[in-house]
Length: 179
Image (cartoon, rainbow, N blue to C red):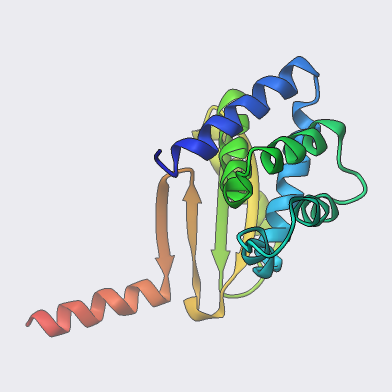
């Protein structure tokens, strides 16, 4: 079976269940918290794929990663995933769930990457500009990457605007090499 298909099906099933239980926002928050745990602790992914750990231990790891604020729906989902031996797809299912949630609730994810932290005034101007251009609710993610040197990279869903100095230097290098 396609590895992308399994997490997608679980994500859709979780969304449908969360709708029935009227807790989609709670599950969305839980999925974000779990994704943050996966991002900050790469060993979590390795642990879920480790055949030496029992199903109970893997479930305990995911419940701990979900935190004390986790809702019943996500805890039941964790149990289901472990029961069906699909724990290696868990992170992908959480990411797919977030995608489904955003699509169903007309939310666009906006990622702004800069070399240093941005001034609040500039952030507000970017938000206002995007709100007028997009007919969606916006969810902002801010990332700092000193490698950009200056400028910014703006990603809105699948579109990207790269106005970084790093990108300009790459373009200049390519031009010089092609002459």
